[in-house]
Length: 108
Image (tube, rainbow, N blue to C red; front, side, top):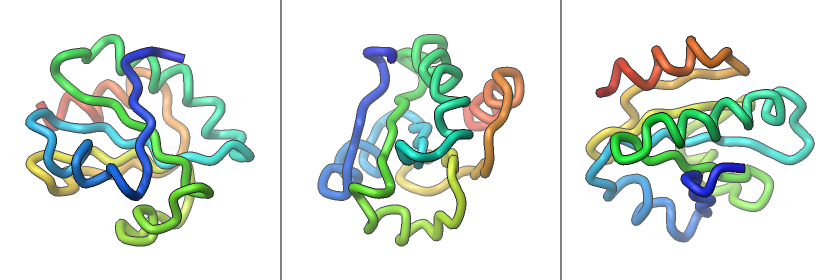
């Protein structure tokens, strides 16, 4: 796992994501989720590729149920891009590296 990826919870979501000066890619995931495990390395790679431009955080929905509920996360993996404290775009389901890069580039 990349050391660029920050693990957040319900308690520090606002400070780490909503109040961030840079866009934030949030990966809503769970340990039992196969597709989450599939895109994990891609998300890690994005964290390294976009270091300094985009903050990448992961939030485990099993341990932090409040935040996914607040953002109506119904399926995982769900990737949300936050910009200026608001949801800029959402991607539900596992995607490839090129698709994820496009998703992130649209917010920059």
